[in-house]
Amino acid sequence: MINQLVDFIGFVIIGIVIAIIFDFFRALRKVKKIPPFIVVIQDIIYFIIATLVIMYGIISILDTNMRLYIFIAIILGCLIYFNFFSKHVINLYIILFKMSKNILEFIILPFYLSIYLIVKICIIIKKIAKKCCKKFFYVITLIQKSLKKKKIKVKKRKKKVLKNEESI
Image (tube, rainbow, N blue to C red; front, top):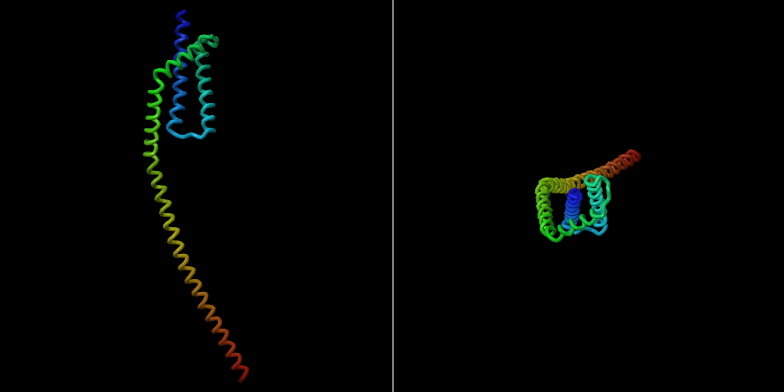
């Protein structure tokens, strides 16, 4: 009888643990807007975790013997948790999520700023290179035009010289 009472209390605790894990996902959904398909994935993850916790409890506490009272104990543990502790634990989770978000932003901020600076420097270098290239191409086109003019003058001179030689 005492062993069954200890087993019952153990499964009440397992019910509380399952409810705490459930509140973790609820708090996560309150802090961040999550798309419906990710909610489905989170639900699947929750049910896998809950199943593993219950199976571990059955294997370790009952030595793989199934009893009806374990399901009653799990439900009782969930009810006790949801009625007395859930609101406080959800608030604690929300505070922890917000703190971890702030800490993560604080850690990532230097990397973000350095990437931002690198991008800005690259943009400035690109603008300078564009201006230089425009000037460079402008100079090249001027040189080409002047060379064309010189070629035309040289051709005209050659024609004049050839005409003068012919006339002589």
